[in-house]
Length: 520
Image (cartoon, rainbow, N blue to C red; front, top):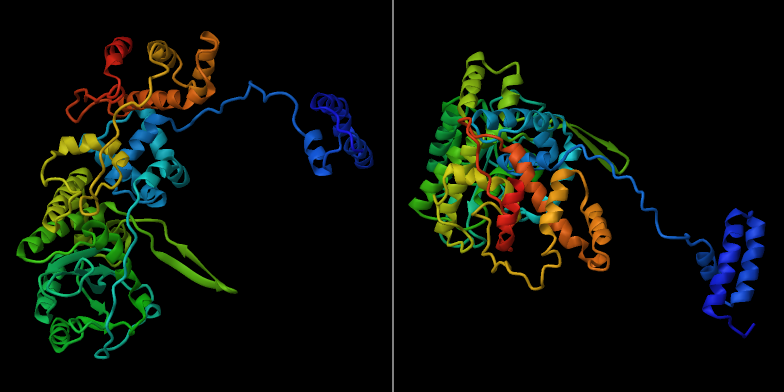
């Protein structure tokens, strides 16, 4: 059929047969479809789409589910996540009760009973879901790998030869701070980790030399809470030499090495090189006595923060099924918890660990870490760093709920930020109705921004367009964050109310007086 019917006529035909098409059997649908194609002269697939299209606008009575974890829980979770140095949800779930209790004990966090109950009941998956948009904005750099040398001086021990050893067997390794250029002199970090518990210590060496390695090991042995029984190194000539072998024989320490070019033989220390050393120090070049002193000060704080408040995974089983290897892990736990739970840890050691952990403040430790990192960044000439010691502990705590907005929190990893865009480019379409919307939010805090926008369109017909919904959503979210902070930071450590800055009207100060009047 060459003649084409008009669009209005085609719509009338489709409306007439659409209901009959939906209720017809397969054979009847085929016959109806043949008639429509012949009448409208359109493609058969297009005719199917037209006949199966939904009628009428979507239902406006969509039920909004009740949110279990509201904005106050999310704000408190951000503070705890930042205090734990942005670990994953499973590790944060494992340490959350102890960390929350410590934050409350030191007066850094005072959630309401309802918020506290929700924080203790939140699952690891929910933690990852609530923090997903925050993590995407605060991403870190990828890890780098360092080259290893080969040597054949002492006995070889592979990763499969450990067989779940008792506390006291260490893996040691060097981490170079050369900034990507191996020429010249630079500092080496001598790192050691206990295979059983994951307890990690580090000390900076100005020069990679065998006598300094022995002195560094002596310092690490005094810092470890457990006696050192054995050490395992790679094939670096600074390790595989007569000086270190004689030292181990004299101190009755078992000394082994990994296979050349098999990095997995030192999987435990290789993991800590990235998760601890690179995470807190970065990849910049450091050399000289001043940088060594600052690194030593940083490691003295990091050892307490990591070993007492940073849970980690430990491999339980690895099995091969065809071409795939499946791994299962033990529940996340801190190195301190693993030593306390181990039957071969001495009672005096356990009592010392418990006493030392009770005196530590994780937020104060993180603040000291950030201050020392700022000093390191200043030494390396990082233009994106801040001046060391520029913030007190109270100022640092006040930053935690919003620190994720600025991206990278570590001065050693931060780059120079661009000029912020803090001005409006268009006129505020809700300039005259903000006070009225705020009253609606205060009367019904659970209402959604979409419902508020629909109410505005009904109250002021034709004044607001659908594309302006996002502007209203951003402002309502900021209001809810202020309300949530008032629930989380109910009082300070002295029982006094902690003032919470109100960032809502930083861009439109002309509305500040009106909003404060409404909130009062």
